[in-house]
Length: 213
Image (tube, rainbow, N blue to C red; front, side, top):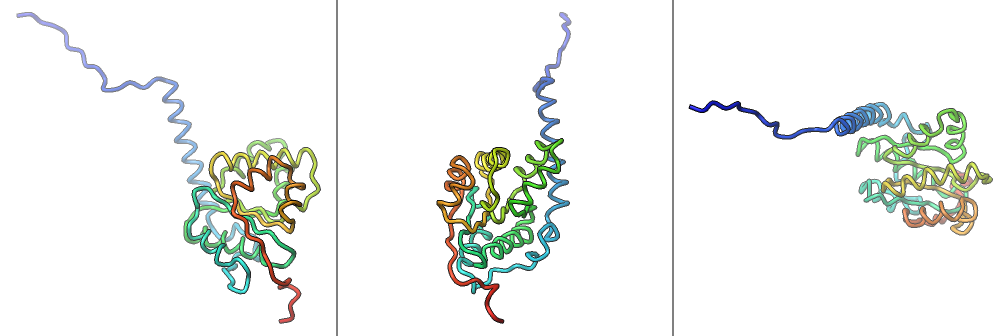
């Protein structure tokens, strides 16, 4: 009788670099879940917009509501353009509130000036702060184009918008600028991406803040 040694081959083998990659992915997921758990509340929004609704007296309310209901819209964003007091930020707030309450994902809602200030305050770790902004499921930037641009501002804005462009991550933009003014204020590279990324809603009507109630 011939005796032979039996060897058991593994069904599959994993290389060390693959283990490292899997571990990194799991850590990323854990961090992401923690972020979602901590940020997906209306308390993360500016106080004024925590109760914002789709006011039918504001031009474009139906477009905003449809956008919120269909989030994430295959990465398509929306821009509200028009003069002061047309309800642009109100609708952006209504979208943010709806997405948090109904889709249960975090929203970052910042004015453009505040967004830049947040990054400046974290210059020692600005890459991490920019990545946090890029990673949030929905980014709302209010009053884009109001800041006088510098090389640093334009470069920083490009990093954020380009990241979201490449990852099909939607943005909501409000601006008092016309389309041409916005292009001049944020630069061709940023504007070109926003133009492709976002549907545009031109707000009309009177300044509702000035109306006598």
